Amino acid sequence: MRKTVAAILCTVACSTSFALELAAYPKVFSGPEGSEVVLAPTADGKAALFRISGVSHAVDKVLFLAQLDRRGGSNEAYVTTFDGRESAMVQKKAAEYGGGDRYVAYLPGTQKELDLSFNEKKSKQLKPADLLAAYEKQKNDGLQEKLARFDRNKSVTYNREQLNDTDKEASASCGVPVKTSVDWNAIDDEKLKTLSIHGFCGVVAKNMQRLCRDDAGAFKKKAAALGQIECQFGPELKARVAGQKVVFTTESNAPNQDDFVREFLRNQ
Image (cartoon, rainbow, N blue to C red; front, side, top):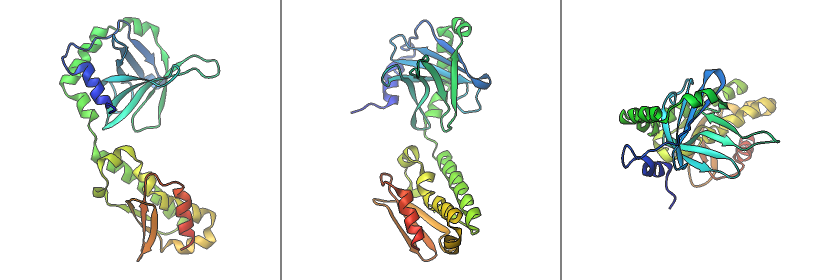
């Protein structure tokens, strides 16, 4: 059975506070807009402490213990748990077109990539003992544990906001109110962690917006009767009109959902 990142990291550092031993030479990288990344491998090379600073994000200045994941060639990722999910916030990417390997950092929940450059001066000044002391203090305060826990309310709020944005775009294009509703109590934590709920459930409104934009004369007349959308997850992909509402059942592995929905809407 495959161990989780959390379980593997616990074998590195959970047994005793002094079990974590860092290699002698940590690295410091400079990033855009004053950001900075510290990467301190463990003595056995299987894990590392890292810290991303100078960013407007919950991870700012937090020291995380991460497992090294070798991904083929010289590609490497340092993987830890954030908000209930595995997160590879610091990565080394193999050279492309004759260039050198490069390090990048990612902020969870964003598409932002921080391109990093090695800072030799700061790397020489950084002491592993200072990093360990700071990490232990944050760990004793429960900071990493808090950030590792899944925040269901935050995830639901984010998906609601994204769905509302999709609905607004459809409403503007179609000239009628479009609203997608989801029974959030029926969406379990695993789906919220692993699936783009707003992406799956927003497919009807998204395709209404496209049809109203591209085929306005024919489809806009139908839009008012299709603007109330109820989305749910089920064992198969289905869509039907019940009363004044489109009932859409999505399935995470079903292919060509855009084509399916667009054809359904055109036939109403």
